[in-house]
Image (cartoon, rainbow, N blue to C red; front, side, top):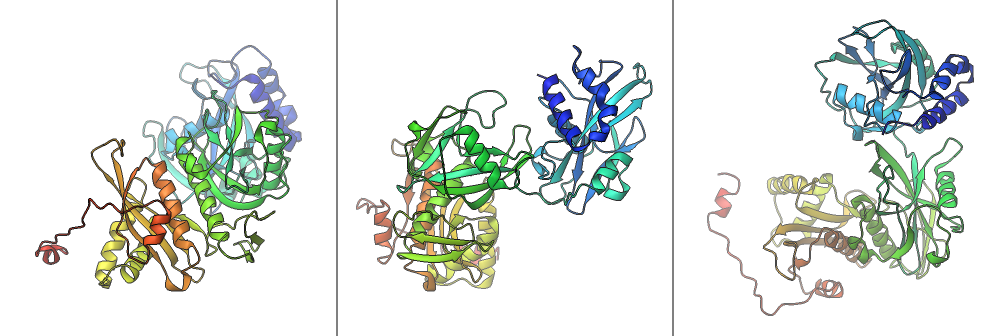
Length: 520
Protein backbone atom coordinates (compact mmCIF):
# COMPACT_ATOMS: atom_id res chain seq x y z
CA UNK A 1 0.00 0.00 0.00
CA UNK A 2 1.51 3.39 -0.99
CA UNK A 3 1.73 6.20 1.55
CA UNK A 4 -1.62 7.85 2.24
CA UNK A 5 -2.22 11.42 1.19
CA UNK A 6 -3.03 12.37 4.77
CA UNK A 7 0.29 10.97 6.03
CA UNK A 8 2.20 12.86 3.35
CA UNK A 9 0.27 16.04 4.13
CA UNK A 10 1.17 15.72 7.81
CA UNK A 11 4.84 15.26 6.86
CA UNK A 12 4.79 18.35 4.65
CA UNK A 13 3.16 20.41 7.40
CA UNK A 14 5.85 19.30 9.85
CA UNK A 15 8.47 20.39 7.33
CA UNK A 16 6.77 23.77 6.89
CA UNK A 17 6.83 24.29 10.65
CA UNK A 18 10.62 24.34 10.32
CA UNK A 19 10.64 26.24 7.01
CA UNK A 20 7.56 28.51 6.93
CA UNK A 21 9.06 30.71 4.18
CA UNK A 22 8.62 27.80 1.71
CA UNK A 23 4.85 27.57 2.08
CA UNK A 24 4.19 29.44 -1.16
CA UNK A 25 6.37 27.03 -3.14
CA UNK A 26 4.70 24.01 -1.55
CA UNK A 27 1.06 25.13 -1.69
CA UNK A 28 0.65 23.36 -5.09
CA UNK A 29 1.90 20.15 -3.45
CA UNK A 30 -0.68 20.50 -0.68
CA UNK A 31 -3.33 21.01 -3.35
CA UNK A 32 -2.09 17.88 -5.16
CA UNK A 33 -2.48 15.94 -1.89
CA UNK A 34 -6.12 16.96 -1.69
CA UNK A 35 -6.89 15.44 -5.11
CA UNK A 36 -7.87 11.91 -6.06
CA UNK A 37 -4.75 10.89 -8.01
CA UNK A 38 -1.88 9.07 -6.33
CA UNK A 39 0.73 11.81 -5.70
CA UNK A 40 3.53 9.22 -5.54
CA UNK A 41 2.84 7.69 -8.98
CA UNK A 42 5.06 8.80 -11.85
CA UNK A 43 1.96 8.58 -14.05
CA UNK A 44 0.37 11.46 -12.14
CA UNK A 45 0.79 14.60 -14.21
CA UNK A 46 1.71 17.41 -14.34
CA UNK A 47 3.46 16.85 -10.99
CA UNK A 48 4.28 14.06 -8.55
CA UNK A 49 6.52 13.19 -5.60
CA UNK A 50 10.00 11.67 -5.65
CA UNK A 51 12.21 10.76 -2.67
CA UNK A 52 15.93 11.09 -1.96
CA UNK A 53 18.36 9.97 0.75
CA UNK A 54 20.94 12.37 2.18
CA UNK A 55 23.50 9.93 3.62
CA UNK A 56 25.96 11.66 5.97
CA UNK A 57 29.19 10.19 7.35
CA UNK A 58 31.11 11.17 10.49
CA UNK A 59 33.33 13.52 8.51
CA UNK A 60 30.22 15.51 7.54
CA UNK A 61 30.27 14.41 3.94
CA UNK A 62 27.25 13.52 1.82
CA UNK A 63 27.09 10.62 -0.63
CA UNK A 64 26.50 11.63 -4.27
CA UNK A 65 26.06 9.43 -7.32
CA UNK A 66 26.41 10.12 -11.04
CA UNK A 67 23.14 9.26 -12.79
CA UNK A 68 23.70 7.81 -16.27
CA UNK A 69 20.39 9.03 -17.68
CA UNK A 70 20.73 12.69 -16.71
CA UNK A 71 24.51 12.98 -16.38
CA UNK A 72 23.94 14.83 -13.08
CA UNK A 73 25.69 14.26 -9.75
CA UNK A 74 22.90 13.97 -7.16
CA UNK A 75 22.10 12.30 -3.88
CA UNK A 76 20.53 8.82 -4.30
CA UNK A 77 16.81 8.87 -4.99
CA UNK A 78 13.95 8.16 -7.34
CA UNK A 79 10.25 7.46 -7.64
CA UNK A 80 8.29 5.65 -4.91
CA UNK A 81 7.09 2.16 -5.74
CA UNK A 82 3.83 0.42 -4.74
CA UNK A 83 5.56 -1.58 -2.00
CA UNK A 84 6.87 1.51 -0.20
CA UNK A 85 4.71 2.11 2.88
CA UNK A 86 6.15 5.58 3.52
CA UNK A 87 8.14 8.18 1.65
CA UNK A 88 11.06 7.51 3.97
CA UNK A 89 10.91 3.81 3.10
CA UNK A 90 11.11 4.80 -0.59
CA UNK A 91 14.23 6.88 0.09
CA UNK A 92 15.81 3.96 1.98
CA UNK A 93 15.01 1.53 -0.83
CA UNK A 94 16.52 3.87 -3.42
CA UNK A 95 19.83 4.23 -1.60
CA UNK A 96 20.00 0.44 -1.09
CA UNK A 97 19.33 -0.25 -4.78
CA UNK A 98 21.62 2.44 -6.18
CA UNK A 99 24.62 2.16 -3.85
CA UNK A 100 24.44 -1.25 -2.16
CA UNK A 101 24.40 0.34 1.31
CA UNK A 102 22.20 -1.81 3.56
CA UNK A 103 19.26 -0.24 5.34
CA UNK A 104 20.74 -1.44 8.64
CA UNK A 105 23.85 0.66 7.95
CA UNK A 106 21.71 3.81 8.27
CA UNK A 107 19.85 5.51 11.12
CA UNK A 108 17.76 8.63 11.55
CA UNK A 109 19.40 11.81 12.76
CA UNK A 110 18.35 12.87 16.27
CA UNK A 111 18.20 16.48 15.09
CA UNK A 112 15.57 15.86 12.40
CA UNK A 113 14.11 12.46 13.29
CA UNK A 114 11.72 11.61 10.43
CA UNK A 115 11.12 15.17 9.21
CA UNK A 116 12.60 15.83 5.73
CA UNK A 117 15.68 18.03 5.65
CA UNK A 118 14.55 19.51 2.33
CA UNK A 119 11.69 19.40 -0.17
CA UNK A 120 13.07 20.44 -3.52
CA UNK A 121 10.79 21.66 -6.30
CA UNK A 122 12.19 21.36 -9.82
CA UNK A 123 10.91 20.96 -13.36
CA UNK A 124 11.81 17.97 -15.52
CA UNK A 125 12.13 18.15 -19.30
CA UNK A 126 10.20 15.77 -21.55
CA UNK A 127 11.98 12.42 -21.99
CA UNK A 128 11.28 8.71 -22.32
CA UNK A 129 7.79 9.41 -23.58
CA UNK A 130 6.89 11.55 -20.57
CA UNK A 131 5.74 15.15 -21.02
CA UNK A 132 7.41 17.99 -19.12
CA UNK A 133 6.42 17.80 -15.47
CA UNK A 134 7.40 18.81 -11.95
CA UNK A 135 9.03 16.84 -9.15
CA UNK A 136 8.52 17.50 -5.47
CA UNK A 137 11.61 15.73 -4.16
CA UNK A 138 11.26 14.87 -0.47
CA UNK A 139 14.77 14.45 1.00
CA UNK A 140 15.47 12.56 4.22
CA UNK A 141 18.74 12.72 6.15
CA UNK A 142 20.43 9.57 7.49
CA UNK A 143 23.66 8.94 9.38
CA UNK A 144 25.98 6.04 8.67
CA UNK A 145 25.88 3.81 11.75
CA UNK A 146 29.46 2.55 11.49
CA UNK A 147 32.40 2.77 9.16
CA UNK A 148 31.98 3.30 5.42
CA UNK A 149 30.38 0.22 3.86
CA UNK A 150 31.60 -1.00 0.51
CA UNK A 151 29.55 0.55 -2.30
CA UNK A 152 28.01 -1.75 -4.90
CA UNK A 153 26.68 0.62 -7.53
CA UNK A 154 23.65 -0.15 -9.68
CA UNK A 155 25.52 -0.34 -12.99
CA UNK A 156 22.46 0.18 -15.20
CA UNK A 157 21.67 3.59 -13.67
CA UNK A 158 24.73 4.76 -11.72
CA UNK A 159 28.12 5.59 -13.26
CA UNK A 160 30.05 6.59 -10.14
CA UNK A 161 29.91 7.82 -6.54
CA UNK A 162 31.69 10.36 -4.37
CA UNK A 163 31.48 11.89 -0.90
CA UNK A 164 31.18 15.68 -0.76
CA UNK A 165 31.49 18.04 2.18
CA UNK A 166 28.45 20.08 3.17
CA UNK A 167 29.87 23.15 1.40
CA UNK A 168 30.14 21.33 -1.95
CA UNK A 169 26.78 19.50 -2.00
CA UNK A 170 25.36 19.70 -5.52
CA UNK A 171 21.93 21.13 -4.60
CA UNK A 172 22.13 24.78 -3.44
CA UNK A 173 18.98 24.52 -1.30
CA UNK A 174 20.16 21.31 0.37
CA UNK A 175 23.65 22.76 0.81
CA UNK A 176 22.28 25.79 2.69
CA UNK A 177 20.13 23.63 4.96
CA UNK A 178 23.01 21.27 5.76
CA UNK A 179 25.35 24.14 6.65
CA UNK A 180 22.81 25.55 9.12
CA UNK A 181 21.45 22.23 10.39
CA UNK A 182 23.72 21.43 13.33
CA UNK A 183 24.04 17.85 12.07
CA UNK A 184 27.20 16.23 13.43
CA UNK A 185 27.22 12.81 11.72
CA UNK A 186 27.24 10.91 15.03
CA UNK A 187 24.48 8.32 15.57
CA UNK A 188 22.63 8.77 18.85
CA UNK A 189 19.51 7.16 20.33
CA UNK A 190 16.27 8.34 18.72
CA UNK A 191 14.02 5.97 20.68
CA UNK A 192 13.67 5.37 24.41
CA UNK A 193 12.41 2.32 26.31
CA UNK A 194 11.59 1.58 29.95
CA UNK A 195 13.05 -1.55 31.53
CA UNK A 196 10.73 -1.91 34.54
CA UNK A 197 11.56 -4.41 37.29
CA UNK A 198 10.14 -5.25 40.73
CA UNK A 199 11.63 -6.38 44.04
CA UNK A 200 11.01 -10.01 43.09
CA UNK A 201 13.35 -9.66 40.11
CA UNK A 202 10.57 -9.81 37.52
CA UNK A 203 10.27 -7.66 34.38
CA UNK A 204 7.20 -5.90 33.02
CA UNK A 205 6.69 -6.73 29.35
CA UNK A 206 4.20 -5.39 26.83
CA UNK A 207 2.55 -7.66 24.24
CA UNK A 208 2.29 -5.68 21.00
CA UNK A 209 -0.62 -5.75 18.57
CA UNK A 210 -0.21 -8.27 15.77
CA UNK A 211 -1.03 -5.77 13.02
CA UNK A 212 0.79 -4.64 9.83
CA UNK A 213 3.08 -1.67 10.34
CA UNK A 214 3.59 -2.37 14.06
CA UNK A 215 7.20 -2.68 15.19
CA UNK A 216 7.73 -6.35 16.17
CA UNK A 217 4.03 -7.24 15.83
CA UNK A 218 2.70 -9.90 18.18
CA UNK A 219 5.89 -9.96 20.28
CA UNK A 220 6.64 -9.01 23.87
CA UNK A 221 8.77 -5.92 24.31
CA UNK A 222 9.63 -3.05 26.61
CA UNK A 223 7.33 -0.05 26.81
CA UNK A 224 8.54 2.99 24.92
CA UNK A 225 8.83 4.46 21.46
CA UNK A 226 10.33 7.11 19.21
CA UNK A 227 11.28 10.67 20.02
CA UNK A 228 9.00 13.50 18.97
CA UNK A 229 10.15 17.03 18.08
CA UNK A 230 8.75 18.40 21.34
CA UNK A 231 10.85 16.01 23.49
CA UNK A 232 13.80 17.91 24.97
CA UNK A 233 15.52 14.81 26.36
CA UNK A 234 15.22 11.05 25.91
CA UNK A 235 13.79 10.81 29.42
CA UNK A 236 11.05 13.15 28.18
CA UNK A 237 10.50 10.67 25.36
CA UNK A 238 10.16 7.60 27.56
CA UNK A 239 7.91 9.39 30.07
CA UNK A 240 5.67 10.70 27.28
CA UNK A 241 5.45 7.21 25.78
CA UNK A 242 4.59 5.70 29.17
CA UNK A 243 1.89 8.34 29.64
CA UNK A 244 0.42 7.55 26.23
CA UNK A 245 0.59 3.76 26.50
CA UNK A 246 -0.10 3.20 30.23
CA UNK A 247 -1.52 6.44 31.72
CA UNK A 248 -1.75 5.10 35.31
CA UNK A 249 1.82 3.77 35.49
CA UNK A 250 4.04 6.11 37.52
CA UNK A 251 7.77 5.38 37.80
CA UNK A 252 9.35 7.97 40.13
CA UNK A 253 12.96 7.27 39.16
CA UNK A 254 14.17 6.33 35.70
CA UNK A 255 17.93 6.04 35.21
CA UNK A 256 19.87 5.42 31.98
CA UNK A 257 20.85 1.76 31.90
CA UNK A 258 22.13 0.87 28.44
CA UNK A 259 21.92 1.59 24.75
CA UNK A 260 20.77 -1.05 22.32
CA UNK A 261 20.15 -1.18 18.60
CA UNK A 262 17.09 -2.59 16.93
CA UNK A 263 15.80 -2.80 13.37
CA UNK A 264 12.91 -0.53 12.43
CA UNK A 265 9.96 -1.38 10.21
CA UNK A 266 11.79 0.15 7.22
CA UNK A 267 15.00 -1.77 7.95
CA UNK A 268 16.87 1.18 9.46
CA UNK A 269 19.05 0.76 12.52
CA UNK A 270 17.28 2.28 15.53
CA UNK A 271 19.56 3.27 18.46
CA UNK A 272 17.54 3.06 21.68
CA UNK A 273 18.28 4.53 25.12
CA UNK A 274 17.02 2.12 27.76
CA UNK A 275 16.00 3.53 31.14
CA UNK A 276 15.65 1.27 34.19
CA UNK A 277 13.02 1.88 36.84
CA UNK A 278 11.63 0.00 39.83
CA UNK A 279 7.87 -0.50 40.32
CA UNK A 280 5.87 -2.91 42.45
CA UNK A 281 2.28 -3.20 41.36
CA UNK A 282 -0.42 -5.16 39.61
CA UNK A 283 -0.38 -4.57 35.83
CA UNK A 284 -3.99 -5.77 35.57
CA UNK A 285 -5.03 -2.58 37.38
CA UNK A 286 -3.43 -0.36 34.74
CA UNK A 287 -5.24 1.13 31.76
CA UNK A 288 -3.52 0.01 28.56
CA UNK A 289 -4.19 2.20 25.52
CA UNK A 290 -1.82 0.42 23.11
CA UNK A 291 -1.03 -3.25 22.68
CA UNK A 292 -2.71 -6.33 24.13
CA UNK A 293 -1.55 -6.83 27.71
CA UNK A 294 1.12 -6.22 30.37
CA UNK A 295 2.60 -9.05 32.45
CA UNK A 296 5.44 -9.70 34.89
CA UNK A 297 7.96 -12.34 33.81
CA UNK A 298 10.87 -13.85 35.72
CA UNK A 299 14.20 -14.11 33.83
CA UNK A 300 13.92 -17.91 33.61
CA UNK A 301 10.67 -17.51 31.65
CA UNK A 302 12.06 -15.28 28.92
CA UNK A 303 13.12 -18.11 26.61
CA UNK A 304 9.46 -19.18 26.37
CA UNK A 305 8.29 -15.82 25.00
CA UNK A 306 8.26 -14.37 21.54
CA UNK A 307 10.92 -11.80 22.31
CA UNK A 308 13.72 -10.28 20.25
CA UNK A 309 17.17 -11.72 21.11
CA UNK A 310 18.46 -8.23 21.85
CA UNK A 311 15.72 -7.51 24.38
CA UNK A 312 16.13 -10.90 25.99
CA UNK A 313 19.88 -10.40 26.37
CA UNK A 314 19.30 -6.93 27.80
CA UNK A 315 16.93 -8.27 30.45
CA UNK A 316 19.28 -11.11 31.36
CA UNK A 317 22.13 -8.63 31.62
CA UNK A 318 20.10 -6.45 33.98
CA UNK A 319 19.16 -9.50 36.07
CA UNK A 320 22.82 -10.46 36.35
CA UNK A 321 23.71 -6.89 37.32
CA UNK A 322 21.17 -6.87 40.14
CA UNK A 323 22.37 -10.25 41.34
CA UNK A 324 25.95 -8.98 41.50
CA UNK A 325 24.98 -5.71 43.19
CA UNK A 326 22.87 -7.29 45.89
CA UNK A 327 25.88 -9.34 46.95
CA UNK A 328 28.03 -6.27 47.54
CA UNK A 329 26.96 -5.65 51.14
CA UNK A 330 24.22 -3.62 52.80
CA UNK A 331 24.92 -0.37 50.92
CA UNK A 332 27.55 1.11 48.64
CA UNK A 333 27.95 3.88 46.10
CA UNK A 334 29.24 3.78 42.53
CA UNK A 335 29.34 6.08 39.54
CA UNK A 336 28.61 4.93 36.02
CA UNK A 337 30.48 5.90 32.86
CA UNK A 338 28.72 9.28 32.73
CA UNK A 339 29.52 10.12 36.36
CA UNK A 340 25.98 9.56 37.65
CA UNK A 341 25.68 8.54 41.32
CA UNK A 342 24.17 5.10 41.82
CA UNK A 343 23.17 3.45 45.08
CA UNK A 344 22.29 -0.15 45.82
CA UNK A 345 20.89 -1.56 49.04
CA UNK A 346 20.66 -5.15 50.19
CA UNK A 347 17.21 -6.59 49.44
CA UNK A 348 14.49 -4.35 47.94
CA UNK A 349 16.77 -1.36 47.07
CA UNK A 350 14.21 1.47 47.13
CA UNK A 351 14.84 3.86 44.25
CA UNK A 352 18.10 2.15 43.32
CA UNK A 353 18.98 1.14 39.81
CA UNK A 354 21.77 -0.85 38.30
CA UNK A 355 24.86 0.70 36.76
CA UNK A 356 25.50 0.43 33.08
CA UNK A 357 28.17 -1.67 31.37
CA UNK A 358 31.86 -1.63 32.27
CA UNK A 359 31.68 -0.58 35.90
CA UNK A 360 33.65 -3.62 37.07
CA UNK A 361 30.69 -5.49 38.61
CA UNK A 362 28.50 -6.10 35.58
CA UNK A 363 28.31 -9.31 33.54
CA UNK A 364 27.81 -8.63 29.85
CA UNK A 365 27.74 -10.82 26.71
CA UNK A 366 31.25 -11.38 25.38
CA UNK A 367 32.28 -10.20 21.92
CA UNK A 368 35.12 -11.42 19.67
CA UNK A 369 37.42 -8.70 21.04
CA UNK A 370 37.23 -10.41 24.47
CA UNK A 371 38.70 -13.66 23.12
CA UNK A 372 42.29 -12.84 24.08
CA UNK A 373 41.41 -12.07 27.71
CA UNK A 374 39.19 -15.16 28.03
CA UNK A 375 42.00 -17.33 26.66
CA UNK A 376 44.43 -15.75 29.15
CA UNK A 377 42.15 -16.37 32.15
CA UNK A 378 41.62 -19.97 31.05
CA UNK A 379 45.37 -20.46 30.70
CA UNK A 380 46.39 -18.85 33.99
CA UNK A 381 43.53 -19.94 36.25
CA UNK A 382 42.23 -23.26 34.89
CA UNK A 383 44.81 -25.18 32.87
CA UNK A 384 47.39 -27.12 34.86
CA UNK A 385 50.00 -26.19 32.25
CA UNK A 386 49.70 -22.51 31.24
CA UNK A 387 49.96 -21.82 27.51
CA UNK A 388 52.85 -20.03 25.86
CA UNK A 389 52.28 -16.91 23.73
CA UNK A 390 51.96 -18.85 20.46
CA UNK A 391 49.25 -21.07 21.94
CA UNK A 392 47.48 -18.09 23.49
CA UNK A 393 47.39 -16.44 20.06
CA UNK A 394 46.03 -19.63 18.51
CA UNK A 395 43.31 -19.93 21.17
CA UNK A 396 42.45 -16.25 20.83
CA UNK A 397 41.96 -16.50 17.07
CA UNK A 398 39.89 -19.70 17.36
CA UNK A 399 37.68 -18.26 20.07
CA UNK A 400 37.22 -14.88 18.37
CA UNK A 401 35.80 -16.61 15.29
CA UNK A 402 33.52 -18.76 17.44
CA UNK A 403 32.22 -15.77 19.45
CA UNK A 404 31.22 -13.98 16.25
CA UNK A 405 27.53 -14.10 15.18
CA UNK A 406 26.74 -17.61 13.96
CA UNK A 407 29.57 -19.15 15.98
CA UNK A 408 29.20 -21.91 18.57
CA UNK A 409 30.69 -20.07 21.57
CA UNK A 410 28.69 -18.17 24.19
CA UNK A 411 30.27 -16.25 27.05
CA UNK A 412 29.54 -13.64 29.70
CA UNK A 413 32.29 -11.57 31.25
CA UNK A 414 32.82 -9.02 34.01
CA UNK A 415 35.12 -6.12 33.20
CA UNK A 416 38.06 -5.23 35.41
CA UNK A 417 37.95 -1.45 36.09
CA UNK A 418 41.73 -1.42 35.73
CA UNK A 419 41.61 -3.06 32.29
CA UNK A 420 41.00 -6.55 30.98
CA UNK A 421 38.51 -8.95 32.55
CA UNK A 422 37.82 -9.80 36.18
CA UNK A 423 35.71 -12.89 35.42
CA UNK A 424 34.48 -15.01 32.52
CA UNK A 425 32.05 -17.87 31.93
CA UNK A 426 32.44 -19.62 28.56
CA UNK A 427 30.42 -22.39 26.92
CA UNK A 428 30.64 -24.15 23.58
CA UNK A 429 27.42 -25.39 21.99
CA UNK A 430 27.44 -28.76 20.23
CA UNK A 431 24.89 -30.42 17.97
CA UNK A 432 23.93 -33.89 19.21
CA UNK A 433 21.33 -36.41 18.20
CA UNK A 434 17.96 -35.42 19.73
CA UNK A 435 16.59 -37.31 22.71
CA UNK A 436 13.67 -36.71 25.10
CA UNK A 437 15.88 -34.71 27.49
CA UNK A 438 17.35 -32.57 24.71
CA UNK A 439 14.71 -32.47 21.94
CA UNK A 440 16.43 -29.71 19.94
CA UNK A 441 19.64 -31.68 19.79
CA UNK A 442 21.71 -28.95 21.44
CA UNK A 443 24.21 -29.52 24.22
CA UNK A 444 26.60 -27.11 25.89
CA UNK A 445 29.95 -27.78 27.49
CA UNK A 446 30.90 -25.21 30.14
CA UNK A 447 34.46 -24.70 28.97
CA UNK A 448 35.72 -22.14 31.47
CA UNK A 449 34.53 -20.26 34.56
CA UNK A 450 37.35 -18.18 35.98
CA UNK A 451 37.72 -15.19 38.30
CA UNK A 452 40.87 -13.17 38.91
CA UNK A 453 41.95 -13.82 42.54
CA UNK A 454 41.56 -10.16 43.61
CA UNK A 455 37.90 -10.25 42.55
CA UNK A 456 36.84 -13.53 44.12
CA UNK A 457 34.08 -13.94 46.73
CA UNK A 458 32.06 -11.09 45.22
CA UNK A 459 29.53 -13.21 43.35
CA UNK A 460 30.98 -12.45 39.90
CA UNK A 461 31.30 -16.09 38.82
CA UNK A 462 27.76 -16.93 39.85
CA UNK A 463 26.36 -13.82 38.16
CA UNK A 464 28.25 -14.48 34.91
CA UNK A 465 27.36 -18.18 34.85
CA UNK A 466 23.70 -17.48 35.70
CA UNK A 467 23.48 -15.06 32.77
CA UNK A 468 25.23 -17.55 30.50
CA UNK A 469 22.89 -20.42 31.43
CA UNK A 470 19.82 -18.25 30.89
CA UNK A 471 21.17 -17.24 27.46
CA UNK A 472 21.81 -20.88 26.54
CA UNK A 473 18.33 -21.93 27.65
CA UNK A 474 16.93 -19.21 25.42
CA UNK A 475 18.86 -20.76 22.54
CA UNK A 476 17.19 -24.13 23.22
CA UNK A 477 20.05 -25.87 25.05
CA UNK A 478 18.78 -28.42 27.60
CA UNK A 479 21.86 -30.61 28.16
CA UNK A 480 24.91 -29.22 29.96
CA UNK A 481 28.27 -30.74 30.81
CA UNK A 482 31.18 -29.48 32.87
CA UNK A 483 34.12 -30.73 34.92
CA UNK A 484 34.21 -29.16 38.38
CA UNK A 485 37.01 -28.81 40.88
CA UNK A 486 36.28 -29.44 44.54
CA UNK A 487 36.46 -25.69 45.14
CA UNK A 488 33.91 -24.80 42.45
CA UNK A 489 31.52 -27.74 42.93
CA UNK A 490 29.26 -25.90 45.45
CA UNK A 491 28.68 -23.08 42.92
CA UNK A 492 27.60 -25.51 40.22
CA UNK A 493 25.43 -27.48 42.63
CA UNK A 494 23.65 -24.26 43.62
CA UNK A 495 22.83 -23.69 39.93
CA UNK A 496 21.30 -27.15 39.50
CA UNK A 497 24.25 -29.25 38.30
CA UNK A 498 24.37 -32.80 39.74
CA UNK A 499 26.88 -35.61 39.64
CA UNK A 500 26.08 -38.51 37.36
CA UNK A 501 27.53 -41.73 38.85
CA UNK A 502 26.87 -43.55 35.59
CA UNK A 503 29.50 -41.47 33.81
CA UNK A 504 33.26 -41.75 34.17
CA UNK A 505 35.56 -39.19 32.62
CA UNK A 506 38.10 -40.80 30.31
CA UNK A 507 40.53 -38.96 28.06
CA UNK A 508 42.73 -40.03 25.18
CA UNK A 509 45.33 -37.80 23.52
CA UNK A 510 47.16 -39.45 20.59
CA UNK A 511 50.92 -39.25 20.94
CA UNK A 512 51.13 -37.43 17.59
CA UNK A 513 48.78 -34.60 18.69
CA UNK A 514 51.48 -32.27 19.99
CA UNK A 515 53.64 -32.76 16.92
CA UNK A 516 50.86 -32.00 14.45
CA UNK A 517 49.06 -29.26 16.34
CA UNK A 518 50.98 -26.44 14.67
CA UNK A 519 51.34 -28.21 11.37
CA UNK A 520 54.88 -29.44 12.05
